[in-house]
Image 1 (cartoon, rainbow, N blue to C red):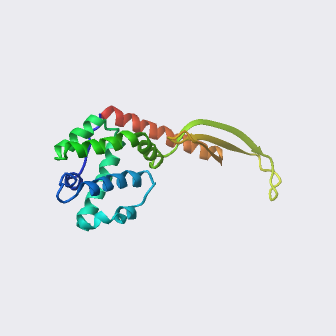
Image 2 (cartoon, one colour):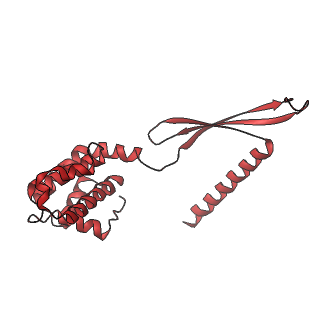
Image 3 (cartoon, rainbow, N blue to C red):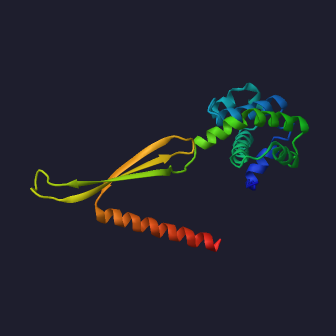
Length: 198
């Protein structure tokens, strides 16, 4: 399993959720619900402050705790942390068993939905899954009587992580195609060198 890297600020924010004097039970439940709903794009951060019970909590502490728990959810779900590991982490940061169980139920209910949101909101480039090409030959143009120039039409089929296919098409001369192939071979060699070193 991948290791979980959470900053000290995030861990302090999560630990604040254990302070039952600072964060009453109804406020705690509202914060947890709001964090999950914001990630799922069902609510916005402003919904956090609409609950009247929230007014009893220091605004700065509330914002820090809210932000920290959002990061906690996203980081644990990004590496697909299991329920037992999440519970252990919450125990380490002094949350009561009732609060751990409450949070755990949210993870259980929304795990798949959050992982789906994370897979859609990533910054990965599309993968090339197929390449087709054809050679066109221009005999003449409007301005020049004889041209006799080959042009390569390249079609790339791409796929995003969520299985959405796309097409990229471009035309190039023989020299441009040779340059592209040379650069791809160079990239391949660089990758091979890197994998040997590591």
